[in-house]
Length: 230
Image (cartoon, rainbow, N blue to C red; front, side):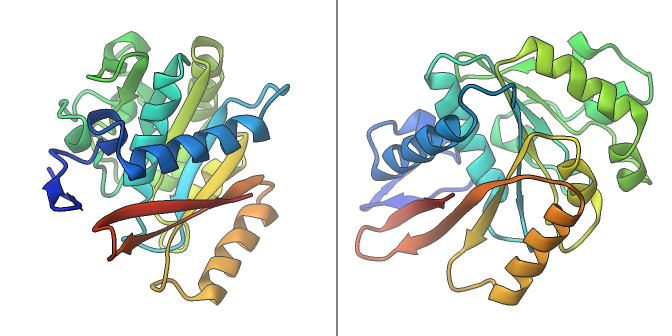
């Protein structure tokens, strides 16, 4: 687990919103949850993708904690690891990576067998499974579309953690399947032009931007904070 300092105290894992619900960080993520839920209210939009322009922006951290807070609000939530190159959801939630999404998509195993419960009530995860040689093709396949249709019917909200959008095409492909995209940005580290190109590519692929989450380390408080921009 990654240990993150909060005012001299260490969070036991990356699931801070669940394990430290009274922390400043948890409150910030709940605010983001509220913004996200308002942005999809009175619509059939259920599938949300969390990505970033480049590596190290905190997208998996954000996706995991956002999914946790949505589940805490009583929504039946699913978090899917579609970062088929560097999957981390299994490590964050301490579950086995196999079997997972890729095993299901190639017909090896039924959907029920890859939906794994977590320590967070109302939150299930689907891990990556065996890493395939052709991730982009899998994201663009008919079976991936069928998977999305199925989980849309079974869950209130589905969060997809993807690889960085400017590194590989997987996330750009998936953006046209999901209902909305959130981009994680690490303040002070990502070039603005790179972010603009990332958003432009998503929009050009008919992806809908819900907003951006800007995160950074607040030295004065000794912990993470997040801002959401719709």
